[in-house]
Image (cartoon, rainbow, N blue to C red; front, side):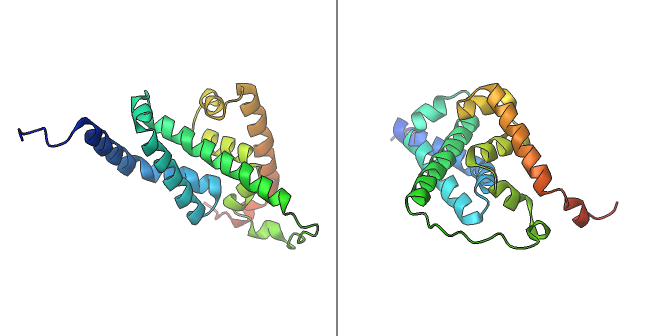
Length: 174
Protein backbone atom coordinates (compact mmCIF):
# COMPACT_ATOMS: atom_id res chain seq x y z
CA UNK A 1 0.00 0.00 0.00
CA UNK A 2 1.51 3.41 -0.93
CA UNK A 3 2.42 5.76 1.96
CA UNK A 4 -0.42 8.00 3.07
CA UNK A 5 -3.16 5.65 1.82
CA UNK A 6 -3.46 3.46 4.89
CA UNK A 7 -6.89 4.87 5.72
CA UNK A 8 -9.90 5.27 3.52
CA UNK A 9 -11.87 8.54 3.56
CA UNK A 10 -14.46 7.25 6.06
CA UNK A 11 -11.77 6.17 8.49
CA UNK A 12 -10.02 9.55 8.22
CA UNK A 13 -13.22 11.33 9.21
CA UNK A 14 -13.36 8.96 12.21
CA UNK A 15 -9.90 10.11 13.20
CA UNK A 16 -11.02 13.70 12.78
CA UNK A 17 -13.90 13.01 15.14
CA UNK A 18 -11.58 11.39 17.68
CA UNK A 19 -9.29 14.42 17.62
CA UNK A 20 -12.25 16.77 17.95
CA UNK A 21 -13.74 14.73 20.81
CA UNK A 22 -10.43 14.73 22.71
CA UNK A 23 -10.08 18.51 22.48
CA UNK A 24 -13.76 19.41 23.01
CA UNK A 25 -14.67 16.92 25.73
CA UNK A 26 -13.38 18.95 28.69
CA UNK A 27 -15.24 22.12 27.70
CA UNK A 28 -18.42 20.17 26.92
CA UNK A 29 -18.17 18.48 30.32
CA UNK A 30 -17.78 21.82 32.10
CA UNK A 31 -20.91 23.19 30.45
CA UNK A 32 -22.76 19.92 31.07
CA UNK A 33 -21.78 20.04 34.77
CA UNK A 34 -23.18 23.53 35.12
CA UNK A 35 -26.38 22.50 33.39
CA UNK A 36 -26.85 19.20 35.26
CA UNK A 37 -25.40 20.18 38.60
CA UNK A 38 -23.72 16.82 39.22
CA UNK A 39 -20.78 14.87 37.86
CA UNK A 40 -22.69 11.73 36.86
CA UNK A 41 -25.31 13.65 34.92
CA UNK A 42 -22.62 15.77 33.28
CA UNK A 43 -20.67 12.67 32.19
CA UNK A 44 -23.83 11.12 30.76
CA UNK A 45 -24.78 14.32 28.95
CA UNK A 46 -21.27 14.74 27.54
CA UNK A 47 -21.17 11.15 26.32
CA UNK A 48 -24.66 11.39 24.80
CA UNK A 49 -23.59 14.59 23.04
CA UNK A 50 -20.42 13.00 21.68
CA UNK A 51 -22.40 9.95 20.52
CA UNK A 52 -24.85 12.18 18.65
CA UNK A 53 -21.98 14.12 17.13
CA UNK A 54 -20.35 10.90 15.99
CA UNK A 55 -23.58 9.76 14.34
CA UNK A 56 -23.81 13.04 12.44
CA UNK A 57 -20.10 13.82 12.17
CA UNK A 58 -20.21 14.55 8.44
CA UNK A 59 -22.69 17.38 9.06
CA UNK A 60 -21.05 18.53 12.31
CA UNK A 61 -17.56 18.64 10.83
CA UNK A 62 -18.85 20.64 7.87
CA UNK A 63 -20.22 23.31 10.22
CA UNK A 64 -18.35 26.60 10.28
CA UNK A 65 -17.76 26.21 14.03
CA UNK A 66 -17.91 22.54 15.12
CA UNK A 67 -17.51 23.59 18.79
CA UNK A 68 -20.64 25.73 18.58
CA UNK A 69 -22.44 22.87 16.84
CA UNK A 70 -21.41 20.56 19.70
CA UNK A 71 -22.59 23.06 22.33
CA UNK A 72 -25.93 23.29 20.53
CA UNK A 73 -26.29 19.50 20.58
CA UNK A 74 -25.36 19.42 24.27
CA UNK A 75 -27.82 22.15 25.23
CA UNK A 76 -30.71 20.75 23.22
CA UNK A 77 -30.04 17.25 24.57
CA UNK A 78 -30.08 18.63 28.13
CA UNK A 79 -33.39 20.42 27.55
CA UNK A 80 -34.98 17.39 25.86
CA UNK A 81 -33.93 15.13 28.74
CA UNK A 82 -35.32 17.60 31.29
CA UNK A 83 -38.64 17.80 29.44
CA UNK A 84 -38.79 14.01 29.33
CA UNK A 85 -37.93 13.77 33.03
CA UNK A 86 -40.55 16.39 33.91
CA UNK A 87 -43.22 14.48 31.96
CA UNK A 88 -42.24 11.29 33.83
CA UNK A 89 -42.35 13.08 37.18
CA UNK A 90 -45.74 14.59 36.47
CA UNK A 91 -47.07 11.21 35.40
CA UNK A 92 -45.87 9.57 38.64
CA UNK A 93 -46.16 12.51 41.00
CA UNK A 94 -46.88 12.03 44.68
CA UNK A 95 -49.26 14.45 46.30
CA UNK A 96 -47.12 15.00 49.39
CA UNK A 97 -43.85 16.84 48.92
CA UNK A 98 -41.15 17.13 51.54
CA UNK A 99 -40.96 20.56 53.16
CA UNK A 100 -37.92 22.71 52.44
CA UNK A 101 -35.25 22.32 55.11
CA UNK A 102 -34.90 25.10 57.65
CA UNK A 103 -32.12 27.63 57.06
CA UNK A 104 -31.64 26.32 53.53
CA UNK A 105 -30.05 29.62 52.51
CA UNK A 106 -27.08 28.77 54.74
CA UNK A 107 -26.36 25.70 52.59
CA UNK A 108 -26.96 27.28 49.22
CA UNK A 109 -24.29 26.97 46.60
CA UNK A 110 -24.33 28.26 43.09
CA UNK A 111 -25.20 24.81 41.75
CA UNK A 112 -28.09 24.44 44.17
CA UNK A 113 -29.39 27.86 43.18
CA UNK A 114 -29.02 27.04 39.50
CA UNK A 115 -30.87 23.77 40.05
CA UNK A 116 -33.91 25.74 41.21
CA UNK A 117 -34.22 27.49 37.88
CA UNK A 118 -36.33 25.93 35.15
CA UNK A 119 -34.11 24.00 32.70
CA UNK A 120 -34.48 26.51 29.85
CA UNK A 121 -33.69 29.51 32.09
CA UNK A 122 -30.78 27.60 33.60
CA UNK A 123 -29.44 26.84 30.13
CA UNK A 124 -29.74 30.51 29.17
CA UNK A 125 -27.88 31.69 32.27
CA UNK A 126 -25.11 29.11 31.89
CA UNK A 127 -24.63 29.79 28.18
CA UNK A 128 -24.90 33.56 28.50
CA UNK A 129 -22.86 34.22 31.63
CA UNK A 130 -20.67 31.17 32.20
CA UNK A 131 -19.84 30.34 28.59
CA UNK A 132 -19.93 34.08 27.80
CA UNK A 133 -22.04 33.71 24.67
CA UNK A 134 -23.83 36.65 23.14
CA UNK A 135 -27.59 37.11 23.45
CA UNK A 136 -27.85 36.45 19.71
CA UNK A 137 -25.92 33.18 19.96
CA UNK A 138 -27.97 31.92 22.92
CA UNK A 139 -31.19 32.81 21.09
CA UNK A 140 -30.05 30.89 18.04
CA UNK A 141 -28.96 27.88 20.12
CA UNK A 142 -32.27 27.71 21.96
CA UNK A 143 -34.41 28.67 18.97
CA UNK A 144 -36.02 31.69 20.56
CA UNK A 145 -35.95 35.46 20.20
CA UNK A 146 -33.21 37.67 21.62
CA UNK A 147 -35.89 39.39 23.70
CA UNK A 148 -36.79 36.05 25.28
CA UNK A 149 -33.16 35.45 26.20
CA UNK A 150 -32.87 38.92 27.74
CA UNK A 151 -36.10 38.66 29.75
CA UNK A 152 -35.50 35.07 30.89
CA UNK A 153 -31.92 35.86 31.93
CA UNK A 154 -33.08 38.96 33.78
CA UNK A 155 -35.72 36.99 35.70
CA UNK A 156 -33.33 34.11 36.39
CA UNK A 157 -30.61 36.46 37.65
CA UNK A 158 -33.14 38.18 39.91
CA UNK A 159 -34.06 34.78 41.40
CA UNK A 160 -30.40 33.90 41.84
CA UNK A 161 -29.69 37.23 43.54
CA UNK A 162 -32.53 36.66 45.98
CA UNK A 163 -31.47 33.07 46.62
CA UNK A 164 -27.78 33.95 46.98
CA UNK A 165 -28.41 37.24 48.76
CA UNK A 166 -26.56 36.17 51.88
CA UNK A 167 -23.57 34.77 49.98
CA UNK A 168 -21.48 37.70 51.20
CA UNK A 169 -21.55 36.09 54.67
CA UNK A 170 -19.25 33.37 53.34
CA UNK A 171 -16.92 35.65 51.40
CA UNK A 172 -13.50 36.27 52.88
CA UNK A 173 -12.41 39.81 53.43
CA UNK A 174 -9.81 41.11 51.00
